[in-house]
Amino acid sequence: MLKRLFLALVLFASASAQASITGLYGGECMPLGGLSAVKDILFEKDRFEMVQTVFADGNCQVPAYDFSIVGRYEHDEARYEMNMVFDKLRMTVLDSEIAAAFSREALCGIKDWRDHEALDVAGHDCGGHIIPKQDSVAYDIVALTGDVLRFGKPDAEHDGSSPSKRPRSWDTTLFQAK
Image (cartoon, rainbow, N blue to C red):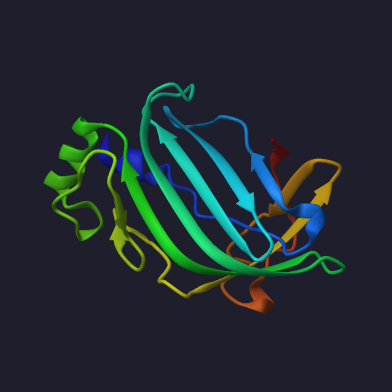
């Protein structure tokens, strides 16, 4: 169960420096193999914050933990390009039983998970998933159509790890203005 909970984490976030894109956007409940997740993204003038809540059920009813990224960004609206610098990467367990399980497993190398306490996971190996380091840069694409925001879909050759590896196709996940 612990590995399934952490495998539900999907690391992608994007933002834009354009006034037209500032605001709060939210995604729909996404089923993830018996689990589920919801992602909200707030864009301010030159900073973003993404919070993905992972749920222990398939219907976004039983919150397990939040994964949050706070950072800075640059956006080239004409080219749909977005560069994001990750300043803070944190996890907050939302259930005492999950905190105890994460502590027993020393998830992310952390042995003292506590309910509702945000812990820094930047650069950590969390259940086989390497969390980006602080100040790392992600290269993405982003488009705003009406009040719907969408991002690039990473693949093996276009994983967003460099400007030349920026995603080239669009993800089907949409974020609605809130």
